[in-house]
Image (cartoon, rainbow, N blue to C red; front, side, top):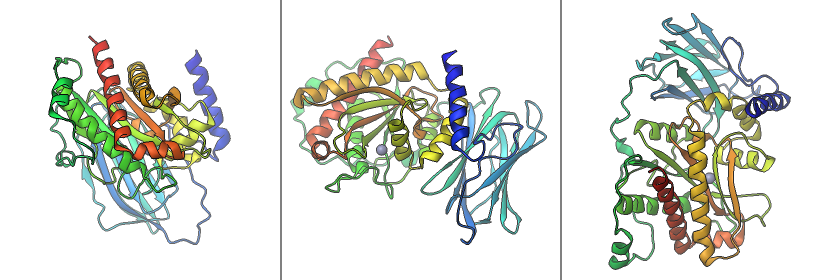
Length: 418
Ligand SMILES: [Zn+2]
């Protein structure tokens, strides 16, 4: 009942905020159209088309050089056992030289074709095999449209697909004093046998051209969270014997839609996205942990816009279709994981900084968590926008404590599953 009400409210809010219904739902013709004042600008260019197959859905990403308006239609509807087509017309767009048709053949889509349909319209055609519905939404920097296609039943993708090689680059140790061998030994003493959780994805936010939040002294979120992520990788491996997959272990840009796709592809049992917070109010401080859901406050919506690298308007587009996208999201498990991590992380930091604020567990429309089929959370380790916490974040001792706190939270979560 409560959920139904929220869906209703969400749609009301969304339709109040948006010029058109943002929902590219089945049987509804046109999708979201963006207001641009750029009639004079040259047409956009479609630079790339990528895809990721998952057990329950297929994700297509169309990479552009700027935002475009689009329209989605269906032919022959692709209902179970009835192959059909979904086509998406990108207005005022030209084909880039690199874009090619792709063969998919994963049970949901046969493939995706692309062509210059009219002088200024690029048409993307998805040849569907057995789909239930699809959703389209925009992301920024680079501009792209992500199309998530869902099926009636899970397809036959092996959850044990080999770990993506690009993700297993050699690890560079974060600059910090090495713990003594004795300390290390003591810590790793009892290697527990973990049956339910064996592979974990650690996702340091941002990277490459995307610095994330930037502190007043110039400290960048992408560097801080990478250092924390690399420590986490070590701890999970050494102390719990877990298989750890990093979405990035160097300073590279990984699109948000690819991060959860990686987690699904390697059959991860947990997904942890590590971030540092920023707020317009420089006095804001504290630690908070999120799982995926609608934003309850404007503050959260603003933070989601920041972390999604998009505008508030695009966050409302996401909010409007979030429930459909969350079909396979492990809501309760994610909330439970968030509780444990938040509690242990706050307790760990409090030992040294007794004033640290516990902002608690919250819910928000963080795009990086969309599509994850395992418990998944996003941790905001402190505020880079606050000078005191910025100084902490750049200190390797604080980074170490954060990693330990998150680690202990995850360990507690794992123990609670037994
Ligand atoms: Zn971030």
